[in-house]
Image 1 (cartoon, rainbow, N blue to C red):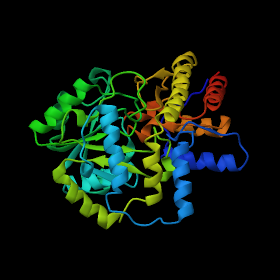
Image 2: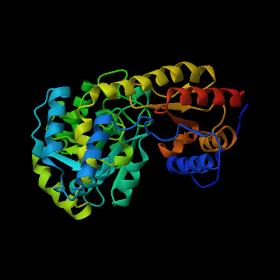
Image 3: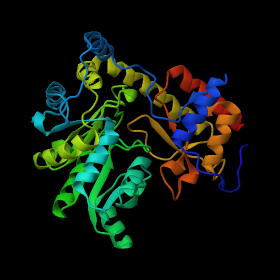
Image 4: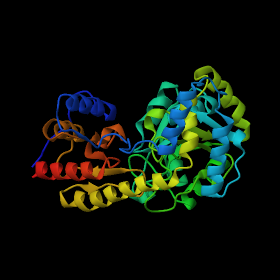
Length: 385
């Protein structure tokens, strides 16, 4: 049985480090299966690829407006009407160089150095890192079964009281990375109302929309015009390397965001915008991809408890299993390193997502092919024995 008695004292071994080491081992001929990074195994939709080929043949790729092409923004407005029944003015939509640029733009436009922003713990580590790099205070609020693994007005109140911070912003992801939490309509409404009552900016990360398997997928835009929504073509649309995302903004923030975007990014890449516009019409193909993730999810929900891992939070959305590994170790970093070195399976240690208690957890991505996920699980099962 695998056992480590204390936390490793080596340098942190996080998701992108795992990816780099996995790539190195694969190049050396090892049969690596990566469950470390949330990268779909499927290609971009065929319509997107064909649109990009045509654009390259024509050869007229250049700068666009700083907030993107009118065609893509209009297509996204149609998307919100079709999927959510919303009438969104295309001028409220900002196209970004991936969701990462959206977070940068939102934080720079909404907050001043020293302002406090709440995020969930465990949560996506880039939130914490970007906020810290910009001189903002990060209030990490523990999300547990008691709070249904999401932020609540009560948990925000308690965290402010304990920390002495006064919040200027709240950032919530639904579906969430790494927990898979889907915050339903009532939970989102409570947060939106709380933020409005206390003059707190509410940022809704919706990049895993389209990948909900249980619960109620609701956009914050259905509840308030004041939410700042950030989304991306990386996950549901399988376009990670195209680096293209979008924001939906309150009208009053469009010009401030545009001015910052002009200085930082000039414009999002036009080729990616052309492909993304076409991808919005590929729902049937993308839902087949989603069905493959659902098959992987069903396998993990059945097999992981059988081999000794407890599922730490419901796998309702995104494509991650967040695991309690304390039956085997209290050093998930050491576990991740040994899994990669000994059985060529890459996973992400929980310290990436939870600096306080992540030594007890591990995240597995099930965005890979069905054959790879099944093989990885059986490798882990045999190894743990």
